[in-house]
Length: 155
Ligand code: SME
Image (cartoon, rainbow, N blue to C red; front, top):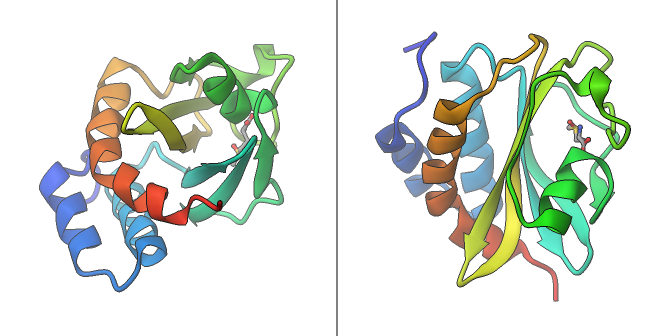
């Protein structure tokens, strides 16, 4: 149903029919984006060494497919080992713009066995689009996606 947050069972259904970890992550991103109008862009970055690699996304293509730890909102989440909820990206110094229309962003880390294996990143064109409910939802989705992200971590 368009206009409401995706349910965990929708995400589970989307990933369980996929043929590979990458296709499963892609299906999850499309399910989130198509059910949630505030998520103009949503993607999964996988952490290999000290770099985040974009493995799946829904929304406009970005040139920022590799992000070093510490750079931007994405890299800050890894460096500080904490989720990021940014109400207005225009107030940040350490921000990597994927689109000039983005105003708010959320990054939720993917954990597997006590290690960060990646993150879900979402952008909105609205100021303050993301809050505690989004962080809680993406955290629950992240439990399903972390083992898939782990499979894509490069040695
Ligand atoms: N804005 C992010 C970069 C990723 S794009 O939003 C897709 C950042 O500052 O790390």
